[in-house]
Image (cartoon, rainbow over the protein chains, first blue to last red):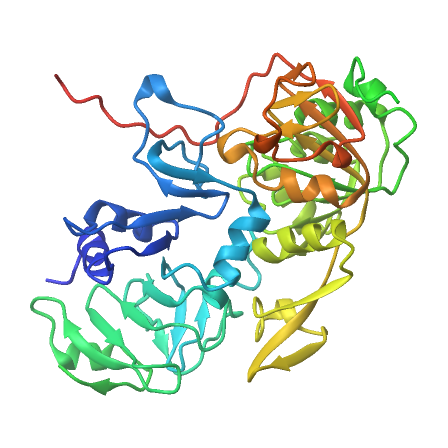
Length: 213
Length: 235
């Protein structure tokens, strides 16, 4: 059985360390917040200007002035702080955020990521994704192993316009986990989802990778 | 020196003309200067360029000025959730310059701080960096981005004192702070204007020097794009 959305998020959450400041992207990455390991203090950053994102508010505590980067209403914690967008991205660009989890349309074997536009389709914009992949210490991609049409998403070279070049550290798909030591090293297949075989991964991956199970 | 005006229209008097470059605060619909945007729409000026993280949604925020075809160009990082925007963009009636969110915020901050350009790693190796100067520092490649100096800044704050010292509330601060600094003139709307001495000088987010004109825009009916809640646990 491949991992579902929640299991992929739970796997990504295993990368969190005590004291980490973390930015979570929209979609599956947001679910990572539900799986922060017990006993570890992790502070979530919202790039629209907040450290210490709390849970969704109770219905009678919804506040239009308190939203996350996905424009959803949230709540604050006793430890929260607010700041401006320039300050928010100063902490991102300045390397102060320990880890980010993002979705992707394609990742290349050299760690390039494409997740913001498809030529010929309506472009909505990159938001903060380019800043995050350029500035955060560790970049985790969570994505389906193949596209809806069945084509591999972990490929030799991205065909879509890039969000960042040579930036991805860890890839978690519904089938397994790829990790690399540093940005000069190749990705290694280090984990398989339950019931998934090495052969199935090989069949659905065109990127070059090493096997280190 | 008069800073406080009775209405958005009065505060913008003499500042508006066709073809202006306007920096606007706000993130989504959070902290947008809605009274000032309405007044700009009602003035009828056109061919405007807006530097703003988003373009509002249909009939909210800058979306209202898209509907009336007063906007020629947007400089933004994300423009989803807006059908009229999409129509004008796809038919090439509207020009759009996509700028990474952090680069956009820093371009405003730099412009306001007298810094004409800066280097960043953001966007290196992507279409955003094409045609721009690159430079290596300590073995890493950076791309040069320009500071933004707008003709006019419009922002939304929470409270201001009569001198124009201003505070924001929660995540409504966002782009309002850097946007305020990068315009030749900054017009601010707030929910409450209080006498000088009522705000702690240590807690001012935007010093009065950045606020040239001020209105109280209350009452506000703040819009939320996505209301998300949780159930209250039974006691």
